[in-house]
Each structure stands twice: as C-alpha cells, then as structure tokens.
Image 1 (cartoon, rainbow, N blue to C red):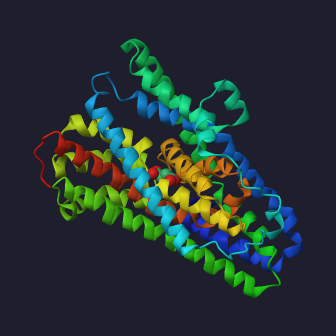
Image 2 (cartoon, rainbow, N blue to C red):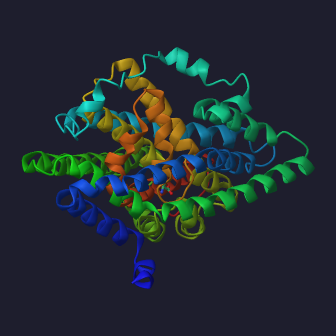
Length: 410
Ligand code: ASP
C-alpha cells in the first residue's frame, strides 16, 4: 500500500487526500480532533523553511548577475521589465478578484474567528519604512519577512560589486544553501496530502450537518480557481502579447517556439527545473544570444514570477473576503506591494507561492490559517501559474534582445 502511495503523483495524492478529508469530515466528525494536528504540523513546517529559502533564493539570483558592467544598462532594463510586468499582473489580479468577488459570502466556517481578526491598520508609508531593518538578525528572529527581503536584495546587489574572489565565495555558499533548502522544501511539500487531509476534514466537519453550506464552499472554491485562471490567461495572452507586439515580435510564433518549456513548466510546476529548456528554446528557436539569455533567464526564474504575483494577490483577497473582512484601498495597496515582494522571494519550485503567502497575510493582519482554505487547490493552480511565470521570462528575453538590436527569428 505504502509503495503504491509513494509512486503516485503528488497531484493525485492531494486529490485523494481532498476526497478522503471531505468524507472524514462528514462521516467521522467527532474524530476530527484526533487528526487536526497534522494540519498544524504542515503549516509549521512550511513556516520553518521560509527564511533560509528566500534568503538563498534571492542572493543566488541577484549575486549571479556578474560584473558591474552587466549590472548597467542590461541589468536595469531587465529588472525594470520584470517589476513592471509583475506589477501589471498583480493589478489585473486585484481588479478581477474585486469584480468577481469569489470569497464574498463564502462563509467558510470562519465566522467565529472574524471578530478576532482585525485587519492591520498600517499605511503604505509605514509598511515601506518598516521594510528597512534596524537589525537584520532581529528581523530574522521575529520572522519579519519584508525587512529580510529588503536586506537580501541589497546584499545580493552589492555582492556583484565586491572582488571576484569574494563574489565567488558568496555565490557558491548561497547556491549550496539554496540547493539544500530546495531539498528540504521538496520534502515538506511531500507532506501536503497529509496537511490537505487534516485541514479539509477540520473545515468540512464544521458543516457536516449543513449540506447547503457545503455546496456553497465548493462553488466558491470553483469561482476562486476560475478567477486565478482567468487572470493568468489575460495576463499572458493579452498583456504580454501586446508588449511583444509593441516590440515587433510575433506572439503566435513566439508561443509556438516556447511550447516545450511551457509544457514542462506546467507539468513540473517548477520554473527552476524548466530553466535549461527555457534557455535552449529561447536561443535555438527565437535566436536570442547567449549573452542575453544567460543574464535574463536565470534571474527571471528566481525573481520574475508574474503568475505567482497575481496569484498571491487574488488568494489573499479571497481569504479576506471569506473572513468577511473589507480591506480598505490602503490595505489593498499593501497587498499589491507585498505580493510583488513575495513573488520576488518565491523560489522556482512547486508550491513556493503558497509558502510565501504568509508574508502577504501578515502584512494585512490576516491569520495564517487562511492558507488552509486554498491549500487543497494550490497544487493545481501552481501548474498554470508556473507556465505563466516561465512565459514572462521568455517574453523579457526576446523583448530585451530586440531592444539591443539583435536579429531574431520571431
Ligand atoms: N511553482 C512556481 C514556480 O516554480 C512558484 C510558485 O509556487 O508560485 O515558478
């Protein structure tokens, strides 16, 4: 039995856990207290990996940029492109989740916690100022993500300005740390089915006697998934393609050329694992030079995640809606900024976006348990958002190559 479970794909394990958790919650309601600790354990393990994973992921991405010259025009162009497109993606997600409102009226059995969840009253200015650490180790001890990300970006950036000898030491050190953290994270991710099983059983048990409410939960989850997929589609097929057309690149030909990395991204849910295929397709099919690919794509796989960025925004606002909390415009702006930082900090591995969501939830004072709501469908949505993450990197590579006057095949 164990062997069969081990060989089954994670997607299927999660699906089975979802069904088993639902049945457990409905038919074995009194026993749910015995298994709910598994959900807590899973969430704690996710929290455990966050800081070292983000720090090593960002430093490896930014410190790999190379010489100060390459940090010049090409560097600022690439980072500017990445930040702008990620921001466009988040704003699209924000608009759609407010229009569709998938969480409004979801009443996901959270009503009793609502009174205890005051959304953080923090202005954007305070948030930005608070992102500068007075003591970076203090921030690490407290688990304050924004100051950690801020310091890490600065550290990665200035590593490129140190002597080649020191650069090499720092880069190798953090690359090794990143490798180890990826392995630990992958091991934690393997426990997702247990987390899904326990959390779903706990949530469902609260409805066991109320079928109408149960139907409501499922229909709201469906609407939430639809919102995410719709936003991903609009961003990749309309926004990004318009940008390609502005740069006189044929979007259809480009999309066709990228089919292998995109399908790989979809099936592996990992931008990092897809990276070699992305580099190969961009160079051999689109005709972009190695100079530009080796600069834009590894950096993109680490810090440019349009799909993850819009996903963070939609998920957190969905959670707030489900808790019945109205986020003010100011708070929604905080979600926008922190979603951007969360996407920058997310590693290119399966479900990294979920790990990073704690940052955005914390910033607006929503409880971490909110993640339990979206956990079950995260893995499926991960496939779609990873494909969009990779597509965003490829668009940056061709657009920047064109702006540098390279002759392309698209
Ligand atoms: N799986 C995504 C990626 O590799 C990250 C995420 O979980 O959002 O790009």
